[in-house]
Image (cartoon, rainbow, N blue to C red; front, top):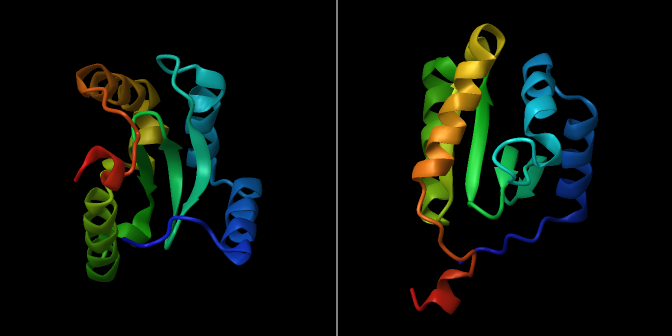
Length: 133
């Protein structure tokens, strides 16, 4: 299993991303930060090698990704498919929303995240080796 410890370069890259959020990321972050959503802690631009996740809740192993226009071409769709496949193999759950969803229906996006949280089985955040898998 690959190491999920970020390199110094990846930590620096994530820090730059946190300091330069897109408008959509900033809008969603205002509603996720400080345990505002169902009491869960979300991190923004969280390094999870080889990726940096837009938003991540470690307690739920939930990744929330926001997709801009570059995600909808053939190359972007393929990159997203590979990323999702990899992260799901690491026992992470993925929710994806378009930037347009956030801009036009932020309350609906938040409701969908809450719906997922309420339906999600709570499992320990132990590594697969510790769970016996």
